[in-house]
Length: 142
Image (cartoon, rainbow, N blue to C red; front, side, top):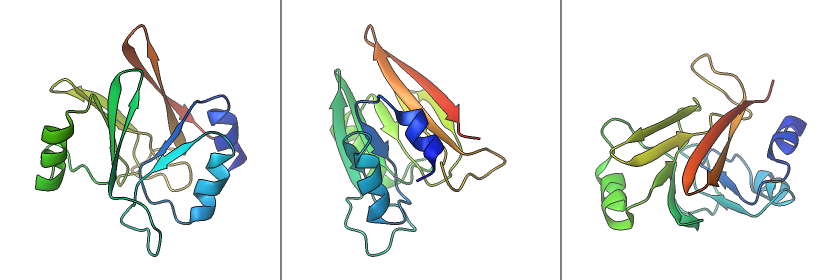
């Protein structure tokens, strides 16, 4: 895990990892920063992580799922959204930073700290809930 990640995440309450972890050593290192909730990515082989997770932060239900396929989510994801009714969906897969509210749900991709794509730079996202409102900031790690 690059030192820039440690600096960018210093002081956070929780780390969400949306897959393509690479190794459980990454999770162990991130746990030194804050508790970690992670899901399996499509490049994670032999790693024991769930396909999806739900966490709640300050009343915001957050679904973590690696592949979202906007604008037409898969049947599995559609079912999860219908069942869980999250306010935030954190996803990975594209490795491209993204934050947009669609149909009352925030879709958030932090980008990638180690393997950015699509012309993006290495990044993480910091999400804060202030006065009941979600505020998201992508942080450039370069």
